[in-house]
Amino acid sequence: MRGTPSKDLVRTLADVARDLQAESGEEATLAAIVRAAVATVPGAAYGGITQVQGRRLTAKVPTDAIVGVCDELQSELGEGPCLDAIWHQHTVIVADMAHEDRWPTFAARAAELGVGSLISFQLYVHDDTLGALNLYGGRGVRFGDEERTIGELFASHSAVALAGARSSRQLTEA
Image (cartoon, rainbow, N blue to C red):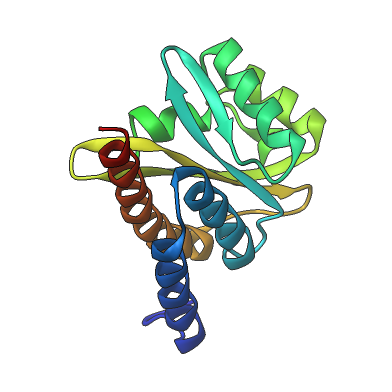
């Protein structure tokens, strides 16, 4: 994807934004975010949203058990791309898990599980970090600039929808 986004991508993101706004409740919004992201970002086989609760990472609405296992590993090890996306960077790309050296223990174990590539997008609005949207590619999938661009556009839409769902929940609880 060079230059301006394709009309199909613009239409897809517009549809996703409308669909997310129509979801009722935080969990339904989270599930819609993950389903749409996996369907939208090229090469994404499965995904989930990582949220931090205390010192634990929690995999929300994973599309595959491997997502929960990877969040649990990062939580145990205190290292990994989802943690870095939540606390330090807006986007973290692991192009090849088998040759990743930023988080050697996590990367080796994730590669053993069959994770070929991973891209994590911080979900944030203003100064509030809501978690990370994590998309996984199997062996042979290598996320790069195109997936990053599409995913960042998607994560922006998702963060706004998630913040809205969270506000609605908090108002209802009050």
